Picture 1 (cartoon, rainbow, N blue to C red):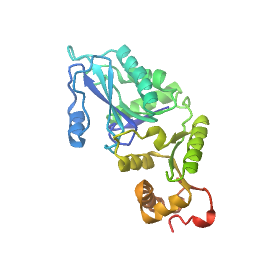
Picture 2: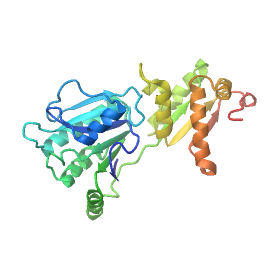
Picture 3: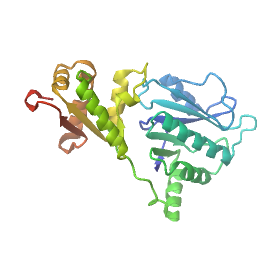
Picture 4: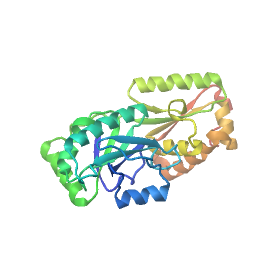
Length: 280
């Protein structure tokens, strides 16, 4: 599913952020600035023209879990080719599937130093990325390009031809009870089988990741959050203990911001209802 947005790929949170570079390792000033300010990982060697290199931020970067460097410009002659952009787009699909990415931020690759037409690049994205289950946010750098893409979409009648968006659901639970852990795992599998992008630590948390930052990122990016509340979860939430305690502080703050219109958080009581006193 493609969405046209105005601005920079750094403007909103995602799972995978795509950054352009050349085959000789050069990058634009705005990319360099973000890399330096946020201490983002950077390839140790040049990337061949038309290839992609994906590096994990280990969830320590609030805006993305993975950074994909796309060598969309041939450094020898400062040019690009549409076939190369198409290959990069196809490679990104593989990377998203391997890393369970459901939100991708990507610029119009090859349209700067590469000299490609932005409409042709956008059409390539539509053909290759447009029908995937994950969300692809395509960022236009200025108002003129953004408006031109919107007008183009309307003229072609393509704005209605979009894929169904799969809701992103983060599942928060306590690890203390093995029965609950097994039940949550089966719940997540059933949600995924029915088109829900269920986010679960047993699926997405990798060794070495910063756990609090990962939980924060997932809570913010989720459309819905399921709170699987058994007595152990309630105890950790009330006492602000372990990962559940950290999530509770974030959730309470977010609930206050949403006010009476809150529909994001759904409490699922597991076990003895009388023993569960969450957020009281």
